Image: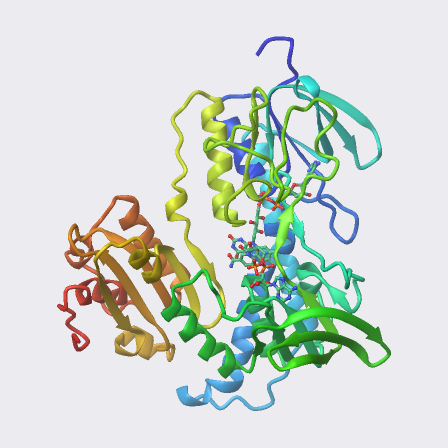
Length: 477
Ligand code: FAD
Ligand code: NAD
């Protein structure tokens, strides 16, 4: 590196996009700094971004704990376990969540150090000529001259104009993860991924949960058969999902918040002790770009990049939630790593057609590739294999036999076009489908692959067989 620069790479943001970029750049032998502005409630900095501090990890910790509580109450008896005198210790549950978060975020700091990355807590701003101005938590300002800059500043929750977050009654997903009492009445606005996951958590823990969704259908991005099955299970759990509900206002009061909305029947309202607004997230770029940075932002607030995550400003890249595409941690990570390899002159590729989606409800929901509707709209002739978990010995043994695996393959070439799973461990099972599709595998490839018995993965094997009406453990219709 010439004296002209302080670092080969300065990464702004230490979430799932930024920290992997910094680590891979370090592994590539480059001199790297990673600057992160995250501050936890205690004012302390932490790496890991939204995902580790206030998203993926804490939500999965609570989903796991609340599911155990739910099963202990409603499903142990069928196993012959009579558990009387069960009680909920929410403080202990929340302590477990916080401990996991603390240890995981601390782990990132150790990983950065291990890769030789200079980790800094502070706010980075890109100035002209790839100078990054860093304002430390103590207010001290330093300037870093970088050969390459990676922007990975992530996203923030979208607020509704007419009901801004107040941190008390009207809260965002981070607030909903840290409640210290189970609200009697919870209203969730938005039946997207956050609404369904966090709605499930608090419903299982005892809240009456009303979910208001503006669209007329649930999970429009999912395969319709999967979405319909999911809706049945959410309702069975007791989530009161109201579709076609256009929220128009909220009035906080002594007895709770009155949320007003309009649906097909006209003006409606619902009372809640807490309202979680989960209507999507938007790219976060506040204070990120100084005069002359050369970086553009589009109408959605995303940093404009090409297919290689290059911004158009020389040697300035952007990755993760702050750029186009699904706001998912694994997509962010792949982009961060790919950019670090490109900077080092190596080959890198992100396959945007195969970003798996997982919703960690019970049953779990996961998919990759095209839905049946997308395949049909594209005019491709396809064959479809469906295998219900009710026919899986392992799922029956687990008392988790709701749901199915649906595999869609091209009728002519047999290439797998999409896999859609609702059922136990769907988020784990989908990995096999992603791998098969990454290698452009066919239904026959999966059919000829031996799957251990009795495992849940046999359901994917059988769905592939069912696509050719050759399932063994289910009737072929
Ligand atoms: P972020 O994680 O937002 O990280 C950006 C970092 O940059 C932050 O630390 C921020 O403080 C920092 N930063 C911003 N501006 C600056 C600046 N100027 N200077 C320095 N630092 C700055 N995704 C999944 O794939 N699976 C899940 O199960 C999942 N669950 C989720 C649950 C919830 C409740 C939420 C809210 C999100 C969830 N997500 C999940 C989405 C996931 O969290 C994001 O896709 C992911 O965190 C994006 O990573 P990122 O690095 O782009 O951004
Ligand atoms: P989302 O886009 O998944 O869902 C938002 C929902 O709110 C949509 O269904 C939308 O129609 C609805 N909506 C929007 N405005 C509304 C209004 N005024 N009234 C009623 N409904 C309204 O967004 P999210 O659930 O907030 O999640 C944000 C991001 O975080 C997503 O991009 C998601 O990918 C990511 N995330 C992922 C996971 C996961 O991978 N398991 C978990 C949580 C969050």
